[in-house]
Length: 201
Image 1 (cartoon, rainbow, N blue to C red):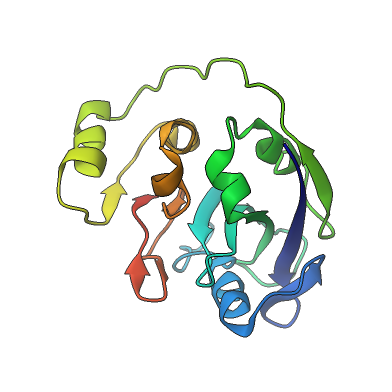
Image 2: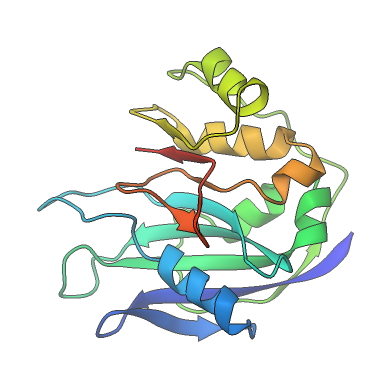
């Protein structure tokens, strides 16, 4: 599969704003990504966090956003972030065999300075993901797949990113294209009134 992946970069510039973009979105889609790209909830004084992942569909249904957010210590104001959001065509996202190509672009060790455009050339698959520890996996699976759909909050997970990646990789296409998840949130997250399916806090 070959597909162009565009992106947007948000960060602090007299407030949280769009800094760089390689895509033009509708007003409704842009309003959502402008809001979700900021940190969810106020940070406590001196609080730090590791770069985290967020995934959600845009209102138009045209794109799925897969993003990473870094804490930005380069600006004078505390609590600011830098977010690189990949804009993945919804059908491409739903059909992806692996998340490896997206995760390579969203390398947590590389602080982003500009939006990027890249051609996705997905290979046949990826190496097996490591097992998850420190989370009640059976209860989480039951809550997502077997119970009435409700927003789920997981507290104090040791490896929230690995849990999210394993889930997104395993979901069938129809569910993956609408599943909304964040591996770090200090307040509820919503897209057009619909709560995220899964957040870690």
